[in-house]
Image (cartoon, rainbow, N blue to C red):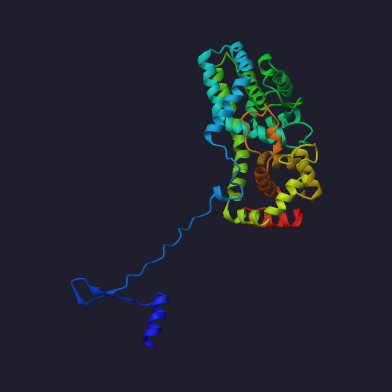
Length: 352
């Protein structure tokens, strides 16, 4: 019947229903009003965000953390560096200027350290820039006019490795054959001091500034590659691939964590990471064993003081996920637009 059809249409919110009410001014009459449709509020669509991703528990370093890292390193290196600078004739004002130059370059110095302290590391000791990679760093990062003789840079390496009395209590963890982060800073100051000629115009602070330009340029290249990987990795498409394979990734992490030493399985050491790389066949023409330790280091969150504990050598699961992104970036066949596909191929083909 028409009434039945009308009721069906009303229940389905189709058409314009009518409301028939008593007229409040005259109960013998009716008032007919059109039905006002109540639109259901649509849930606000929320776009993808890092905070809702698989990497949400990973803490991205901010400017405040960078500043704290610099002051931690400066506190460690200050006794020796100030002695070097005062011997070269610097007063308090010039020392402060040099300190500011180092602070401005610190982001790049730390990136250089992260790469050269980790490349080709086996995990038998903590990260540190060995003499070979210190030399490689100087060859790659310093332009010809600013270079100093190899014998001089070797001597500077040895001088920086000598621990000052005030540094001993704070140095709880270190690589006996490699430079710590603050010792690398000392090396750069010493090399600049070797380039300084007091008989020529300009100050030592000027020489340090010019010398650090080369360091910043080399560090910028490494940092750009580091940030590019994360920019293409931290997105919705790649996040979906990680979520789909999260149980496989967790199984790998838990299966290898704790293998090298007897301890809780909440951390994965570099040795265990390298074992995972070897047993899963992760290496290819572009990703060699020397690069695996770099992927590990790139996945680690920045540590305020890497001489205070082994925390920077113990990987959590969120860090493991980030390191996987860097690993895939280093393998053959990677392209920005294929990041998700490359992750899927690696997770399914190598880890499953």
